[in-house]
Length: 160
Image (cartoon, rainbow, N blue to C red; front, side):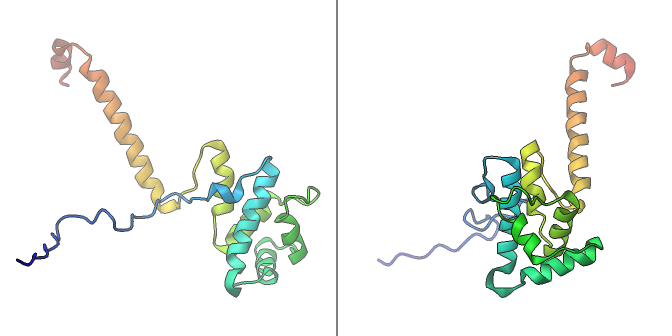
């Protein structure tokens, strides 16, 4: 007797299908782990630059030029190389230049690597209303729990 193959039920989700990506910007911690905050920043800059230049998609000269245009002040390839080196303590990237780098690369991961140190996440602006709605739902649930503790006679009097 031959075995019949079961048809896939279209209404059942595939448990092995790729999951929807997180709305938060994520950084592989193994790529930015460091002993100091300054070294973490350098590793985050290096990660973003290396990913952007892998396969010849961009080069550091073009990235430096884009940062120069964004800031209105000169940024050179040598500066980018220094910012990406954890051993170059005398050359640390400033916050405006870090923002310009994220803008030039269209990559917010260096900021996410820093936000993670504070227990925060970087999320695209379009997700903020959903996050705020969730906060309101949580507040409402807490108020409902507190109202449940109010004696029934008082709730009836108040119309709750």
